[in-house]
Length: 230
Image (cartoon, rainbow, N blue to C red; front, side):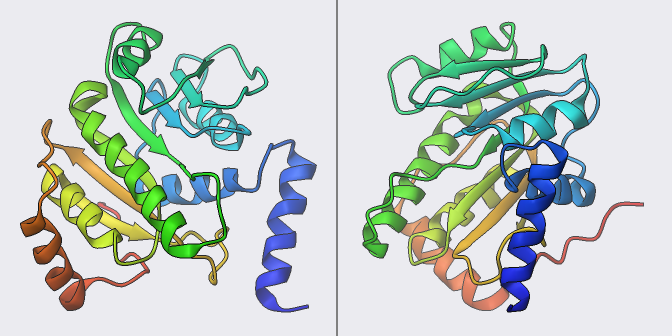
């Protein structure tokens, strides 16, 4: 068995043994251990939450006094008392208002977005759709995320990724690209960990796309070089 296959089986087995709904729960834990974007009592939104692995881990990390809202088009089985499920479409009208109401009329401290479209198998189309969903979440951040808050977003690698990275870098104090150990190395997914929200996001533009491509050629790698603050 190849190393990557063994790793995948390891985390799948752990998820089954420890009662998590998906091995993705370990990706979230590994990122939070490194970046500390969730703490006890945090208000957390998980967009694209089905089947609920990230919700389970968020509930454990943030604790019983936290408010956690999971959002998905598909129904999600009920979890712990501090987790609410909102079956809704992030692209629909007045979504932000319904989400804020679910949070007790307050903005989130942390927005998680583990979004993926229904995959067609046509890579260019799937990549474009996935990045478009991420862009829609970024558009919503001024309405749903507290200033100083964090956003952790899955994204598919490809030529539409740099403009997304550029928008996040202009909206947060720090943005790092992460590939947690529980994520398969051959997978096209990366996680964009954005910390210290400014309260505003720039609009999409040709200029942002061009400058992003130049920036990526100079400085980015798939692995994060984040150093924990001591």
